[in-house]
Length: 263
Length: 370
Image (tube, helix red, strand yellow):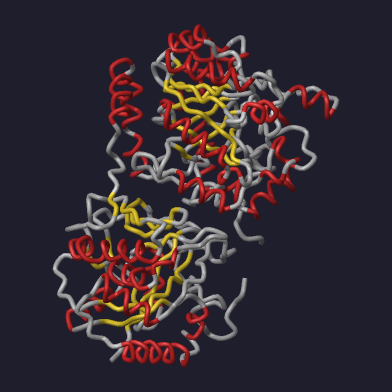
C-alpha cells in the first residue's frame, strides 16, 4: 500500500489515512472500488450548475477558476494536505440559500437537479430515487461534521468548494473521528455539497471497467442513528437511496471531505 | 420531482395477489416473509437456504456448478467414493427448526436434479411447508402436468426452471440432453397450470447479454408473465474448464439495462425495497449433502457444518468475514478477480468440496495480504 513520504494526512492515491480512530475502518485498501476518470471541467460545471441548480448564479467562470486554483494551491502548499490532490477533486458551486430544513431543501431543489443533470449529460441512462418518501424533516447537521460552516456560508452567498471522495472504506463513526484530526478547512461532506458535485460532474460515479464506490452523505445525520442516505451507481445509472450502516465499514462505502474556497 | 422516484415497496397487482393467496393458505409463512424488510433495517439477515441433499442428476451440463460434488465425478476422476456422512431427514428437520427460530423463511431444494430424488416429498415434509416457503430447482425433464399438480399439493410454492437458450439446439447442447428444451416448455405450461409460482433461471456466459437470443428470452418471459433469473457463469465446478464463460462488467451492466424493459433480474437486482447487492450469507446459503454450509452456490468454502455448529454461529461467521459480510454491488465469485484467484488456488486439486471451515474461509481472512 503506498504510504505518504512525509507527515501527510493522505496517501499517494489521495486516500485519507485512517488516523487514530477505533471505529471500523480499513487500515489498508486494495483499491478494488474506484472512481472512473470523470472530466473535471470548470466551465461545464458552472454551466450545469446554472442550468439545473442555481439559475440566478452570479459567480463568473473566471472567479470560479481562480477560487479553485487558490484553494488547490493552499492544499498543495501544506505538506499535511498536499496528497489529497492526488485523488479526485470535484469543484462545485452552491447557490445562496438560507436553509431551514436540510431535507426539504434537498428534496425540492438538489435531488431534482442531480437527476436532471445526469439525464442531460447521459441521456441513454437514468437517475433513480429509491427513497420517494423523501428526506424532509429527517436530515440534521451531524455533530462533529463541521457542517454548520457550510450552511452558514450558503446563507452569506454563493459557495465554491472542492469535494474529495477520499474517506474510502470508513464507517460513519470513523469518518467523524478522523475529521476531528484534520485541519479546520475540511468538512465532512453532506447532502448539498455532494449533490452539487454530482450536478456539476454527473459522471462522477460512472465507471465501465469496474465498480465505483457508494458515496454516503455523512455530513448530515439521518432520522435513525444507524442509517444514512447515499448516492450509488447501478450499472450506467445513478441512484439515491437510504440504508442502515450500523456503524460498520465496507470496501464499497466512501465518504467525502469538502473544502470551501475562500473569497 | 423531476427525477424518477420508484415506489420500491409498492407491489404489482400480481405480486400482491400472490402474497394475499399465500397469507390465506399459510399465514405463518406469509408473516415471516413480511418481516424481512424490518429484519434488514435492523441489520439482521434473512438468507434463503438451498439444500443439496442429493447430487443425483439425469443431465450432465457444460456449466454445472455441482459436478465436482457428484458421485459420478468422484468415481470417474478420483476413482474413489465419497465416504463423508450425508445429511438425512432428521438433519433437515433440525435445520428447519433452527432457521425458523432465526426468522428465516425460505428453502430451495436443489441438487443435482431434485425431481429424481426418491425422497423428494419427504424432504419437503422435513422442511415443513407450513413453516417455510418451499421452492424447488429443476431442469424440467420430469415436470409434467401431473407432477406439477403433485408438487403444489405437497406444499411446494415455487419452481425455478432452467433454460439456457431460446435456440432449441443450443439449449440441448449446453445441457447435453436432446429434447430438454421441449421438456422445459412443457414444464412451463405445467407449472403455471398447477398454480405454482414460476421463474426461469438462465446462465449468462460472456457476451450473451448483448445477443438477440438473450433478448428473445427476456421477451418470452415478459410475454408469459414469468420472471427471468440470470445467474452469471462462475469459474467453479464444470465452468472451471471454461474461463471464457466468465462475464465482464459490461455483460452485467447490459443485464441491468435490460431490467428496465423486461422482468429479468440477477441476485443483485434491487427487489421490493431490498438492496443487498451480493447476497453471500445475507441473502443465500447452501447446505451441501455433507452438511457443510457455503455462502453461495458457487463458493466451495464452508462456513461450518450444520451437524457440528449451530446455524446462528455459522451465519455469524459469514457476516464477520470481510469478503462476505459487507455490502458490495458486484458478484464476489463471478466478478472479483482477487477472490476468484484465491478460490481457484485453494480448491485446485481438492477431492472433497467444499473446503471445510478453516481451510477455505476462516476468522483470519483479510482483504489485503498480510
